[in-house]
Length: 538
Image (cartoon, rainbow, N blue to C red; front, side, top):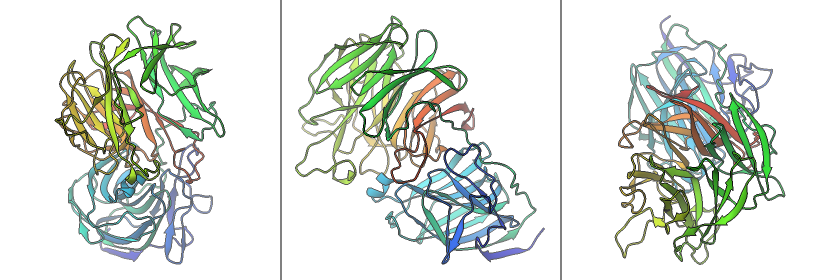
């Protein structure tokens, strides 16, 4: 087939389209054709997905397979948690190029707009070919933006509000279908396409992938989830400690075991009244948990692989700074090859008139760590992760840190910003006793997590766009451009290796997306394989 195709996209009665996606709990995703459900609608020229849920909705036009093309359209997001997408050269709903405009609350509050070109390879994951800031584009909710895409051969060019973005060169897909995508409340209008007709490759029978699953279906539905804890016990099981804050109740803690496949069992509720962190298997095979309050550190212990716990028992720790007044633990312990322990902390600085966390731009925050070299019996005073020379103080743009040991003495951290466009990076050459000054990190991200595999691959996950993973095979010197493993935005993951190059990633799902209408029961999990092409479902 040859010739030109030209037109403006309209949903109409939906019969010329194939729709994919649905509620978080839908067992398979699509395809789901009009009028059975999942259809997009058009009213007064606005094309919109069927609801505002935080999983991906897709609408592909049937019978318009194109190779080279030019697309112009306008898009608008209705929430700070949203992603507008334009698909092209699609073979099916998993295999395509996509021009993406991801929005997330903190980036929008800091006045950053982003654009990306990504590639779906059929696995259900999307690899980023570029992700870049868009200068002079406002991230304000409800504002219309003008987008333009030109794909010619192996070169993909794009513009947003007249700003040209970095060109992408990739020859994976020569032709295919066009379509629209949305995570959250998104609207499109004036979608105009011109292109060269190509042989039909579009397959509407391929269903959306759902590599994630709900690991804890029997736990109470949460109003809020925090970061879980995960470790391998002396018996060889994986033990998860899960905090759940149910409506009208204090946080409750549950332990669950992964003994085979995806089945979590032996669910036990524990009468902990504190925020717990640092779950680990100690040198003698017992389990340890840490609890921090007002600069005092305590421990709970279990000698039956997590069935019962004793404590809290006070531990020795150095003097905390007067400011920040309160430090909060974040993430799992970093454990060196010989067993030294480092725990990251962060705390907000007290300024007159400071507002709460919903107005991030009014906050200032610093990041720290504490360390132990005697299996957690004694701990250092907090060390600022931004090791500036006195009288300079550490940066006030440092919130949640995540990192790992790359040798017995070398330790790195990437730290969530409040105002910055990218994560902040810092290194310690003495096991966390001192740190170099922070520097601009390699990528943006929030709510981070990190893990180093038995074969030395660093895996770094974070919120934005969606839940994204980066890999480093050279101890943090270089990183992959990023792979989106889920559109859920909460992240706050913990990671464990279940076999060489196969990871379990346990993370908060969509329940933090207040007002998004989600029915997600809180936590999600995936098995992820580390392959030469990057992370893939497995």
